[in-house]
Image 1: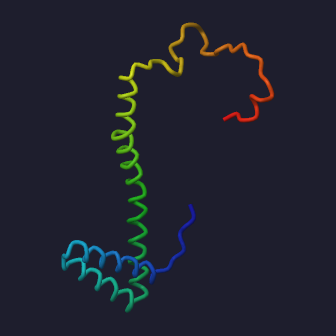
Image 2 (image 1 turned 180 degrees about the vertical axis):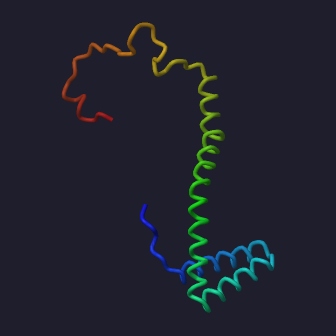
Image 3 (image 1 turned 90 degrees about the vertical axis):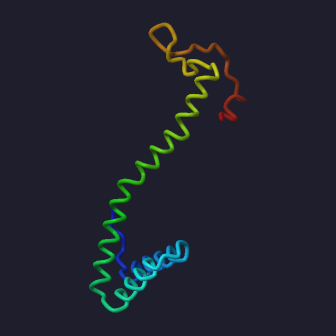
Length: 122
């Protein structure tokens, strides 16, 4: 995967605005202090801005390895498992014809196809 374009000033600005939004939502002074500190560092030092951006990118990389697994697990257990459970209770069994007796699951269809059958296949 290609590395994202580096723009330390914009990254520091996004982090600063993010902490300001957290301050507005939770009314906790620590978010305001962190926001002002990171914003000041972004204005005063390019070197420290690059270091903040490096830490931010490492954090987002670690989160990109963790969060999708959590989301997929939640979707599986909260949505797909209940749907499968209720489908099983509905009484329709073996809709894929997996447990069909014999050596094959192939179904022979004796039908004469017409040109109209190919007009709207879906």
